[in-house]
Image 1 (tube, rainbow, N blue to C red):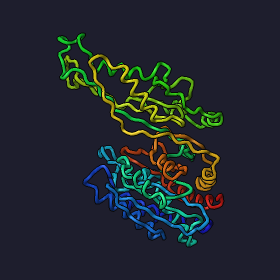
Image 2 (cartoon, rainbow, N blue to C red):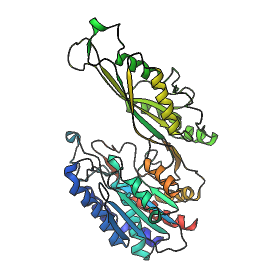
Image 3 (tube, rainbow, N blue to C red):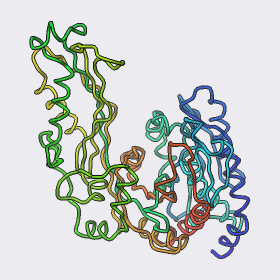
Length: 455
């Protein structure tokens, strides 16, 4: 291990310069004009893994290509599959960037560029750690595969079919993903729980056209009024969701989880300043951290109806729509929530109002046992790389591919994030701490040895 560590320390400047080269490629998957750039980003990481000693294929999909790389020279040892993505978000608004988004700039110990932390920088830590092993020892302690896609920022539409049709090629004992964050500066973390998600757009339609509210008000149902009432009824004054059976399967927090969450250095006053609100609200009986990470939620994500221009226009709108999402916790069945929501809306539509509900996907929550061999190996690796043991956290967000790997490959994912919550993912001035970049490479290198010793 000492030779690997020395290699990583000696080549730290080269690693940063190589990452900068990758970040200069504007691999914006949402922009059809950048299709060639997205392909260049795939070729970049494929070539780098090939030079390190991996067998690499760049495999076409109906959208952007998937890079599949393998080093299988450790028979009898476990296999880890590293997942990441080389596509990035659009950089807009450009006038908010302090330096150009695709000209990586070092400032105050951080590397600023689109994709710096989401996900090129974090993924690159694993690419460099396997290179360090292969260049110093000619082999890895375990078998390692990479699955790197170019459509994560646009919904990963081609990933599930790819995983399903390549199960044998992707078979593994562990999946490793670094696309999350630490708890805070100097507090590394392992994410062991993610929320699930169901997302809808509800459209209510009443009269065939907008009507004069003086001539027709009081005689016909107003879709906007009706939708407002439905939205208001989704939660009660205690913050509890009112769908029938919504809490029936909710897995309660274990005592050790509530204790550890309470011991985390969470500053509620700083959180309020960050979101710009003087007060917080959520389900009664739970702390802010518990609500964010481990309790199911319901949120309206958008509302549209009626006249939106300057001044007044007295109408009864013909249509009203809302986008509504539910974040789910372990044991909740997305299909049950979908059915309950449909019944909830149908029961509250007024006479003459027709409703349509469009689903934008549904996925279950994920929970990984913290005493599993993979998680315990990760604890040792992070402690070696970051100088302190990680805390265990959950996330309020969803990473659908984690559920895909569980369903298709039957394995849990180790969510080992090296980023920070203020890294401006999807926003101007995205950054990645250079110190955390180097720590991540060290932790990744130790992880392969720890997973091998626990096989």
